[in-house]
Length: 246
Length: 368
Image 1 (cartoon, each protein chain N blue to C red):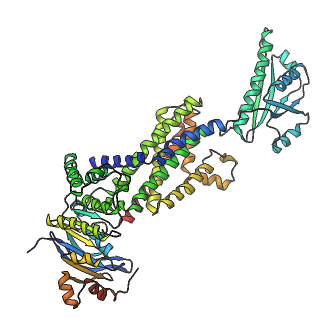
Image 2 (image 1 turned 30 degrees about the horizontal axis):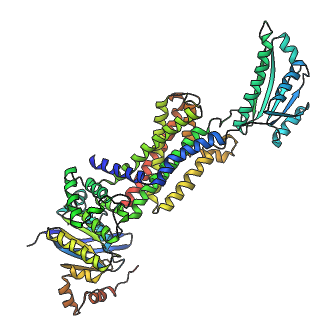
């Protein structure tokens, strides 16, 4: 029996008459890379916001890293990391200042921040850039840095919202190396993406259509179930039935 | 607390790294004070004045010739018709009228004192004031010449009448006015923009996901601007005291306390704008159009509120800058204490409280 770090039970969010996410039930295990797929407007972002404690569910239950999404959002926030599709570091601060700032607001001590930032800069090979403004770095580096900052406080779960948008395939591959390394350390990765090759990198994936989770399994199993040869086709078969779009 | 300090330090880094912001922040107040203080001072030369001489005696003739001799005035019309004065004033042809009563010299000689009337067009209070001062200086000059040979002192008593704006509402008013304007601009616009920028860049999401409390995010955004604005208040005051010779007559402590209150009001407005808008441009536009314009138009700093239509006079009441402007004027220029301004302070404080509650409510709605 694996450790369950995310457990949702009929998690639902309504905005007036509109049901953004409809009774989502899923489990994510410790150290797993979980792909959270769906077309635009399927309700991924809403679901993710609830899991992060940013938005209160209308009904249903969810336990994140052992904490309840209704009552223990503060505890949840301490135990998760987050990286959004928009680039999420401060461009007018240097690499070191960004690390120091995010370490600081997660309550790390100065000593911790110091050792961790040295470690991080060495791992990413940014020694020459540590004192440069983040805005001057190429996008791929920014994103790697952004991810490293998101796991700086050693969260149990990292939520990645389309982290590799607009990045070339080589950099994307390198980015996924970082994700694998984090997962090996026992960090659970919860990632949304539109790239089907990335979906193949995940241990398991769920596909959302019109607010519901329509499929949940490993990529291999999903392809077998749908009797197709690629994730693209699995996704297409499910998503073309969607009524909602942009 | 340590998290809070980390955050405030980061905010300072944002501000101090941005040259343009810094320039606006500290350059603008200095520029404005200097422009208002020097460029707009009316160095009065060759101003047209009318003299109405009912006395036509030795003393009046002598005084008139002295005035004519000075480079400040051009006595271009010696009229004896009382009604013409008002028309000339209305036409804007004349800035000042000097009226000698009948028996000017006799009064002076026999009663040792005589009156003289000075009427000025006070729609432009600075000019009016300067002209009056010049005229009285000439009169006093004449008076002291007379007194050199006299056993009993002669006194000429000028009776000054400021037409259209009897209280000279905006004399020296520009320093309090600039203070209100600068604080409004810095606090409202900069706070609004800096919070909205986080939303636009997507960093706000990261902050909200972190254990850092949303309320603290807002608070730590406000702290740097509070400090910077207080520095601005200090630099404006220094300029006005040391460069413009306009002293602070009242309590400096009280002035700073009231300024802090007004800064908090402005910060709250900035926060409110940022909660309701999604882009830096919109935030900037709203701050400029929605805050700067009313401040300039309705605070009483540029345009006397008394001269406005009743409806607009009512509108001025909801402009926070108006109250701050009154407070600063009373403290700085009239040197009054808290007992004179408690009402204005109360109004300002309740505005702040109201805005604070409204923006916090809105902020929570956005989070849900």
